[in-house]
Length: 317
Image (cartoon, rainbow, N blue to C red; front, side):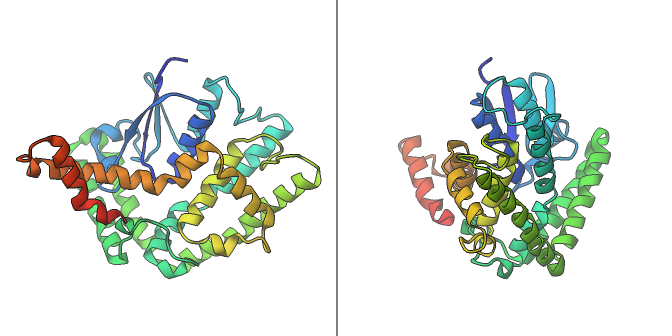
C-alpha cells in the first residue's frame, strides 16, 4: 500500500475519531495525522468546512476522495485495505448481519448528550469525571463557549457566501446544544438508558461463551467493527466516571472481562486509553508555541521550550 495514502483529520478525545483511528491501527494502515482543534473552533474554518459541511471530525482523505461519518470511514478503510482483521464482514452473511445490528444499537447512543451533559452536571457521574482538570469547565463557561461558537458561525456565514448554509446550520447546532445539554432530566435519562444497552452487550457475550467460542469478541471469535463501537463506548463511560455504575463483576462480569481484554489491544490502548494524555500533550505544544516568542531572548530555542513547558505543564495535572 502507498505510504501515507490516507490523511485523517481528527481530535484526540473525539469519540468518533477514536473509532476510525482504532480501525486504521487494526488494519496497520499508514496515515497522515491532521489534528483539528475543536476546543478553539478549528472545525469552523472555511478550509475544513469545505471538507465536511457539518464541521465535524473525523474526516478521511484518500487522494481526492473525502469520506465523512465515522461508520462510513470504517467501512471504507476495511474495503480498501485487504488485510486482516476483517472489520466489516459481508453484510449478507450471518456474522456480517449481526455486526451491523450491533453497530446500529451502539450507534444510537446519544454520545454528545452524555459527554457534555455529564460535564454540565458532574454529580450525575458515579465516581467523578476522569478528564484532565484543564478540560473540566463550569456549566456557565461551557454555555459561553457554545454561545461564542454560535456567534462565530453567524459571522462567518456573511464572510463566506458559498458556505453560508453550512455555517447557519452549525449556528443552530450550537444554540440547540446549550438547550439540550442544560436539560438535567434529559441528561439523566440518557445515562439511565445505558442500562438496557449494556444488558444487551452482556447477553451477547454470555451467549458466545455458552456456545463455547474461545477468546470471544462481541460477535463471535473475530474482532470486528462491532467491537470498535463497544470499546469506544466503554472507554467514554470510563472517562465520564460512569463505569462503576454500569460495570461490576456482580452485575456484568462478561462485560468487565471484555473490557479488560480489549484494553490490551494496542489500537485501543493507544487511541482510547491514551486520549486524555494525547490531548494534553497537543495542547501543551500549542501553548508552548505561544510562549516561545516571549522567551526568544534565551540562549537557545531548546532552553526556551523547556522553560515554556515548565510554565504551563501544571495546568495539565
